[in-house]
Length: 184
Image (cartoon, rainbow, N blue to C red; front, top):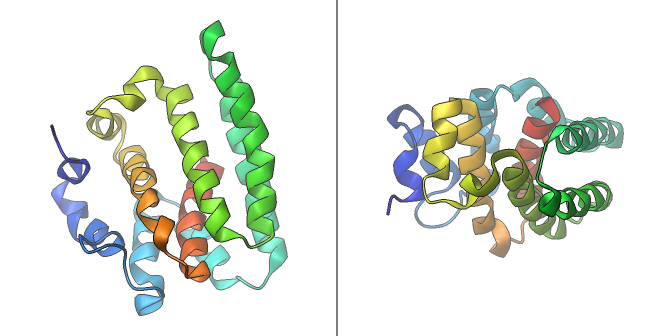
């Protein structure tokens, strides 16, 4: 079976290794979150990410970003066609989004991380169906588009952060996912 890391194209390998080194996760605040900023640029979300990153004390910036996130994800969910048996997935996901937004606004990033992981897994299933549970899912997403592939690789790696207790680091890593989904 192919490892999740084996599907990363060579041109992204150094950066992805900085974000999620084999020894765990990068050092909190290392180099001013430069690797995270470079990754955001690869995803095409660098403007929004950098603004949210540097305006961390401005609640209005985060609130606007979370509104865009919620609106875009809800729109994606509503526009996704699913079998009748999967309608419960849509409804479940729609109820998770506002709770996640509230958790982010309250600054409970360790709780928000698990919520975001659950959201992205459900969203992947709604968007890609059973393919999202297959071993070649990442290869599949990279064939669609490199930014989409990078995002789903990233989303799959977020569970490595569950032991991290540095709230600022969790906030930064969550902002990448939020900005990407807000921009879709």
